[in-house]
Image (tube, rainbow, N blue to C red; front, side, top):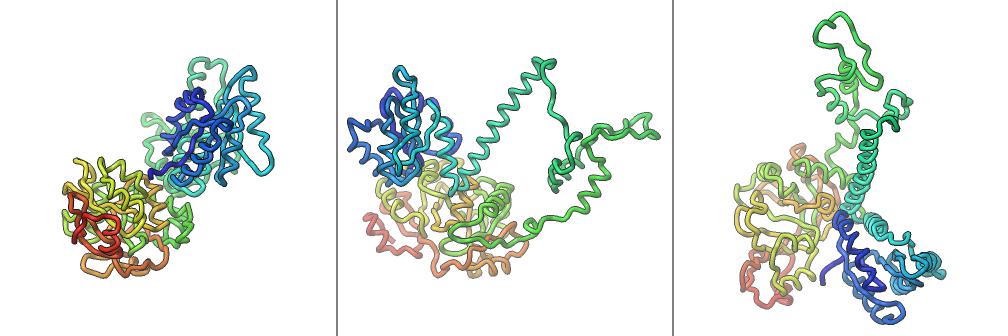
Length: 451
């Protein structure tokens, strides 16, 4: 069954245009939805069945859109423990006020979050924020969405200032701020300011050698900036290479640091459900070449990629056979690497061939990094070629030391056997390497299989 993030139920087909117009917000937030039209009064059994099926399909938040008396959100909330957001819509002479009051005043024990009349966009954003509590990738998208909203307001203000300068005044500059209001100096901002060719208030190049002009308030001289940068203490977190994480609930800030390192072209060592691996951005050829070099891997030998779920696979592989999909729904996440046909021109750095090995690891730390990066990771076992794969962070550090950007310590990995590799390029499917998952187990799901 395909997985969805949000379940949207409508009391009437007349409510659909409102929802349809707001769907781009879901795309921007990286969320999927499943939709149903049903009546709380006329088809209550259908509502109950749909809610049950939606929960089975992975839905994490329900949004009920209804007008008139708006009993629908309460009916949904009575049949699930998941959050329910009610969106009242204009209908009849009261223009949605009756629906708003109905949703906001549900009986005790049937909680529903009430949006304003027609507030479907806010419902989508609230749903995203709820899901973001346990999904780092969605949290990042919500943060980006919020910053874009702020930028839009500032852009409107700039246009107003340009058109009516006599009616506006600009915000006070940093010169009028108290010292406590000035943001802390960081390596990045300090270096960027030093690189600027000139600063406002600096002496002109001609005829000013003996005359010094006072710098504008709010700016720091280049000399002062260089001294500040030289004396700046690099935060302890930036000096560390090994970061210890909770395997079940990894710390968000460390996951974010690892994702940033990978997106900057770095290589990060992390645990998986088999052994420790060296990971980089599979879409960055320079990063992949660095991974080959660190590993001492034979050039041109394909590197498998790790993804965060079947939804990502659907974006990469055009046609997945039904029996293979059924197998993946049972075996992923897990120690099963599947070789698929690779779309022409995609991921050529990790695989020059027409195929690509793909796996969803059963490891919360690695899945969190993949979700945060929002792209497949090229991952190979954390060991120099020909040596035993590392099953703990200490061995990774012994092998590679400062050559990797970060080491995520999630404790010991099983390490007894590697993942099983199966090719589904053509029937009969073939097991290329038998590992943690046996031939007999796979034959239970796929009949047309041979070693």
